[in-house]
Amino acid sequence: MSVGRYAGIVGAAVAGTLAALVVALGGRLAPADLTALLIGSGLAAANSVAAYWLVVWSAGRSNAWFFRAILGGMLARMAFMLVSVVAGILLFGLPRIPLVFSLLGYFVALLVLELAVVSRRLSQHAGRTEAA
Image 1 (cartoon, rainbow, N blue to C red):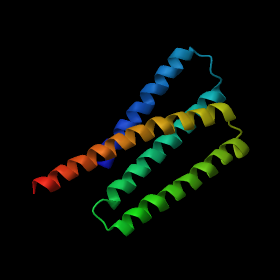
Image 2: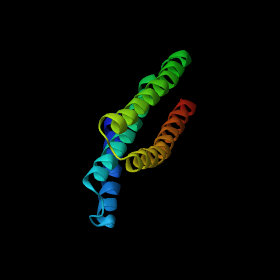
Image 3: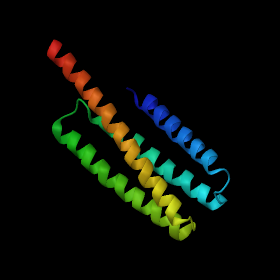
Image 4: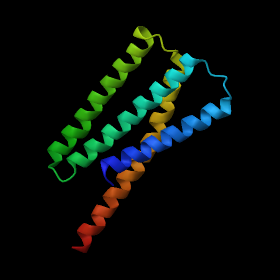
């Protein structure tokens, strides 16, 4: 699966679930809470797409490059997420609970999606290698 297609799936999943959540809460969210939800889910989505891009980019390269990309990318993404959350709370005054819960909730859900897609990608690649 291409990175663009994966990003589209992630975007659709996040937008659909956020829309359902907003409808289910029926206007009980304050504007600041809604902003925090959007930012948290957006950060999680960007993190997921970046992780998938690193997997796609490193596929077919040497094991050393693969591990540099995956582990180095993980460190960079974790640092970016930490700085983003701290900045959102301290600099922009976003509500902590909606920001952190949306970020963590979407992070876990998108991690499951990412693992499923990467696993499927690897099994398809292994099947082609065995057939050759």
